Image (cartoon, rainbow, N blue to C red):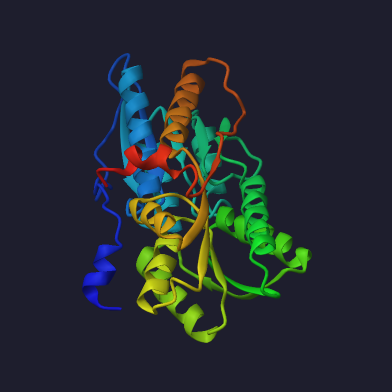
Length: 317
């Protein structure tokens, strides 16, 4: 894969992650909330941040954003630091939901409400959880792929998976999809590789998967970086006409791949709406208002038939 081609498939990211913490002490009557995201390479997380910033502006509150750059330990340290700075609420999209448990308890014990966003936190003192139903979404993706196989029969299909093995939520997507596919008897899983939720890593992992499986029929990608890496890999190896892709999350290149027939479809979340809901929840919790414990935003399976409705959202990306 040459450097120019790799760059062509990189998502534009607003680099607003904090290199350090500026003390976000609340001004009188104007609370400060912290949003801790996984990374800001993926379009998904940038749209989530934009939705959170939109809601914060609407509410007249201050929002500080921490970019963990795919480091779970950085997220833990960020929560602890924000507790010391006495922010009024924390929203976290956890890389490893178990590793942040202690920090979440520390924040809650200090009277700081915590909201889980995207990745589902284990039962604990957090005030609310905003996340799509990844189990239902993964089952829907599997059903669409099995429907594709029924309309394009050619024996038992071989499918590879590009996941993110440090992400609990993406491991759930992998497990559920794999169970449904295997139980159908129509396809077998040829292998699982770790894209580490980073596009360049996912690209290399997908290339290795394709090289090791010359008879591969499809790739399932558990998130946006995995999907973008897989698209680049099948095109680099000249197999875009033979290996179909399916999985999670739109991005400009995913839309183009749907148009070309390389991607059969993706389960699309609404990350901006998720960001808005999380800030609304943390503000209500801080203000002593009722908070809905579980917020489940809708998801939509996007194919060539309905992708047009999403173009404007990604037109300038």
